Length: 352
Length: 132
Image 1 (cartoon, rainbow over the protein chains, first blue to last red):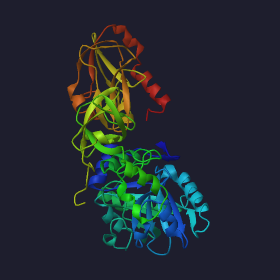
Image 2: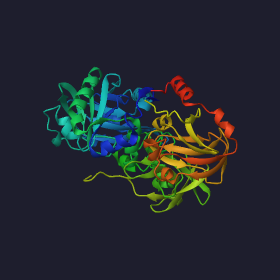
Image 3: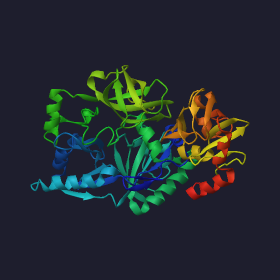
Image 4: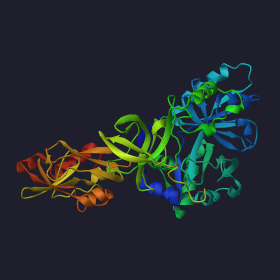
């Protein structure tokens, strides 16, 4: 068990590699109650969210979920988020990172204060909701045991209200692993019951609880960002390869001017994926990256990939050295070790 | 239960040593492999290298962390285990047998007395909260 963003969480239950493989081939259960959730309601909820986020919220039909970011005026990232338009009823449901919950809520309240003309209410729900993820090829069939709602009709990045074993939940077909799966939101006092029921229903099909270690190897193989590593106050969405989640033409939003300007001037750093081709250890966050002996950037995240059997990572490097097939040297314990840049994601599930 | 073979000697940094005349076979123990998790990488000193008791001599890396390896005794490395370097998970599954790491010709066999025997090491692990 380790401390993570103020929460006490397991790095692993049985072993990172075993848990990783279980999610890719069967199903895994994640207790992600550390994540934060915020309700945004009122006649001007849409206008408010449009202004504080990068993606186009007006595109959301009821029940649709969308990835985006909140930015500082200089284009740096406050947090990456998922915005759901509620399946029934008005308002929006925003899911935020555990490490940033207090910061995000304060940020939203501050932005809300600066816009007294908007009729919008921001409510922090983080302490009232539990969150569990079930991910893997068997996730749907296992979850189906707990509800009459036909889960096959719930499309990717949409959510429905459903009773799971009688517990009222928001069920979203979303995840942080690259596999098919669901993220479930329920009243916090019923999280234990939901967890137990899922394990009961899923263990015969191979379901296992999964810790933070495998959570990281899974998301990295699928090239998903971790706030603090790939994006941060110092790394903006354009550098991180997330311009697809930034809709410059949706109207004004915080950070738009700064990013526009940088886009015009040319983005000098780029996030690239690489794999080690020389033996020398595992690349880790903050390791220096060199080309021809010159420092060109740093590793944002790295690990041993259980699926690929190789050491992989993401690095933020000078655009002049970026390009699939081009070499990088990762400095591991003082020694430059050769890597090659590869296409991302490192892993894509069959049929995706 | 952490496995602690009775015929070995141990360091505070969880390496083990087995003695045969002036040659020591060295590895990391069951406690270490369990704490580190799935091992993915080993950096061991080449044959001919001199190692010094209690000084770092290499690296052992798992999915979650990298750790220094410390020499249990001083001497010259005569052999390193290629099976372990090629497949570090061997150290997870067999830390005392197939997962041995080095053979060292000791420069001072009396250094063995500086190491803990199995009984002392088990007590040491309990104090660490790790004898489970």
